[in-house]
Image (cartoon, rainbow, N blue to C red; front, side, top):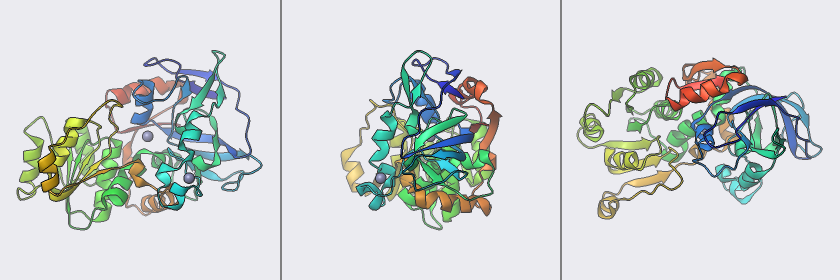
Length: 358
Ligand SMILES: [Zn+2]
Ligand SMILES: [Zn+2]
């Protein structure tokens, strides 16, 4: 069984044959059919998250259940499943209070040593998944059974990036019809915010990105305007598109403190600023205190788009099945597992939107 292992900070992954881990009573064995490559994979490999090495990256994948532990109730053999970047046990305090994106299983699945690897040690699986592999053994809380005709390469994207973006617009910010929206950063997650805003009925949706290809792609998925931040002050460009007021909802989808401040400045008085991008662990955000309070702006952090995966995966799948959510145009490249380092390099260079391992 092949899996890609991250042994050292910043070094290429090693694709090697591993013995499948034992299946515990609450575990499921999933034969993976597709896995998206997400910025969080790159961030973990580059040491920007607290993930200890070695680990098997990949946390956005789908497949079919091949075996289940004795206490598994959520799925059965042959269930088609979508892995979730954050587990949702369904019964902890967070899960029953509609915050399953904060499920207390999160730490457990992230620190469980799953794999015996070739250097003689053992490895964890990123986010408790580890989808850069032919198969994975995960806690049942990390998978959601799905009934859908969606292709694997599209379904996989809902496991993290698309759900994070859609959820930021629909769950965190709760964009309303006729409103104005600006999205800073138009990669896979940013484009999903744009789609969420379109689905919610926003009137003006501005995509902001220095890459011409991503601005063009934003127009395809629902942006009504695009802004090149290199051309002129992006805050002024956005204000010019919104009667000088600024937008009702701004989103930062890069993870840069400077761009978070831009998002704050782009929002109108009383507007909502949603922070989605993953900043470096040691980054700080300094806010102008007087202006922040007396502008009445709301600043919201969005963890996985506040997604309640047991509820939202089926909703988002339905949006894709009925053509309202465009997943196909997000897939810019398809690779095999042994080409995984090429896929990560492309993401590092910000090429394309989403590379999918098939
Ligand atoms: Zn829970
Ligand atoms: Zn991700």
